[in-house]
Image (cartoon, rainbow over all chains, first blue to last red; front, side):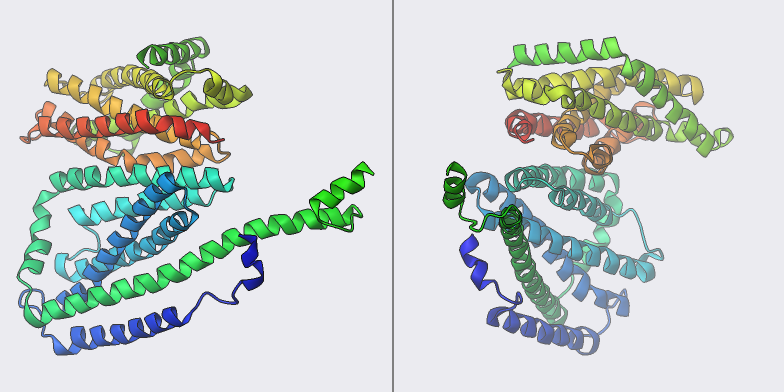
Length: 258
Length: 222
């Protein structure tokens, strides 16, 4: 991929991402107005329930992120495609940010509703384990290694984590089955304007996710480029130190032979 | 595949028997953990008896980390990993062999820990069928998942710190399931322990299958 060396962009934005970012900002404003002004407070939970317009959308985006990490890892193992590998790692990083947001908004919501920041609720517990599972993926991913080794290693870690998710969820909900109904009944009785706000919130969260993902993807791609270009640069510098005027390999070999 | 597995397991257990790392270091560590729990939780208030199942499995989990680390540390010296790779043994067999050796060591540790909780925590063991079945399936799951992450971390300089971070969240369902099943066996809850055994079996089957399919590829990388 050295041919792109000359055309390395100065930043990771493009017209599409700028439009997407702008649309996300407008969307956030719209959701704020809808969620805080237009919709009324919940019959049971009052104003605290407004957090649903933030909490549920970021949780959905988080799932999309980890889904993409799994898909990207499978595709890397199957096609050995650098593009998919970069998607996997970028989606995981952005997904972790969204998991953090989900946990924090969940805790902020939990305080007025349950009276405590943290409760060993099935979903909360599952999400905290998910966070740790995928944190492990990122740690493995950032260990220094050859590209091929690094990609394969992290792809397997992603798959190992993925097959664990249903077991984690099942075990935690068996353990803590009682607390589940509160969340479920709230979302099943939601309707009209509230549902519209929630859906808008989801679209905006996914747009924000896409914006972050695209930028992270481009940065990750450029990092890889830099690694390979940096290596070539270092080699040519060492050659220059050794007094070889040309960095062309056949020419150097020729010079040595002579 | 099974012949190769037996070979690898036999080799690992012989190495273990001659070096006595599990017996001399991991087993005392496991008992030490039980004693530390007694310091942390007041033995006079009955907390230990109530928490026996959970404390037992936490001790098993910590010991499993050490056992897995040890199982792959013996492969990482003197280019043993390359030797294993070039040996012509079926990678699935190598996986099953390494996992079986870890599982057998863990089974021994569990027996010791059971004696430990009876003596130190005054626990009365009951529900033997459920107890033993839980131990068997949980141990297979732990050994399989442990061996997968063990080989993954084996070649890395940071393996000692990386393995717990990777393995513990993954085996969290085993801790949960095995603890609940033990509580049911001890008659501390009215819940059905066998459904937890079902969950533990699913975990074991998934990770054994994953290992059989993917171990070769994980062993390849250096």
